[in-house]
Image (cartoon, rainbow, N blue to C red; front, top):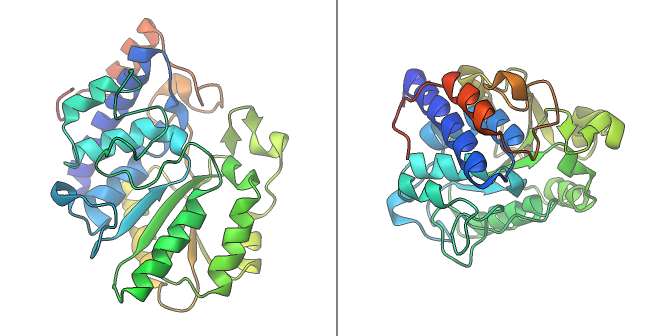
Length: 281
């Protein structure tokens, strides 16, 4: 996909996100909007995937694991817009008996979802296991994962970070959504994360920054650089500097929209800022 096509999809994904959470007055728009460019770029241009023939093990494919599962609106939208399941199914978000629950689950067989990720801190461990399996199977594929920065306050991450470097997991790229905000406020207020670059490097990782984490060109170049660092005995961490609520002016610059749905007037404003590009569901 060209950058223009990716940008059109980002705009449509933003519309999907705000419409989904508005309909059920529930969900997490802030982080979803902040990661729209990243996930659209990853699925539209980077991942080696087979959306029409989805399998849980994904043999011969790159795999992606969403660890911060509360940003399911952006994940579902990107999966649907990339052909994993009908776009119309987005209309069932968070409804009773829907496959699109507030946090991704696997028991209903939603295409594109390989782990349940409602509990924070577990995704990296799963991604490392998948990375090891790919190595054992002799595959030349890459494992990707996405994590919230506040999620790194969970201790299991640091065991996984230590394990990955200690066991030469060098087919793995972990991306941190580094927006410096979480549900209760700034990460520096809730529980300071310190110098993440220095921490990951001290644990034996290669660390890269994508300073413009809401710019598609910067994301594509950053992911290409990260992939070029694989195969050298070390896992790779990307610090993706994003803006929570990106693309909707009243949601940007604050943690207030981490888990709050827009009302009717706010939805109207958000949609006006993001004109329809690929067709609403």
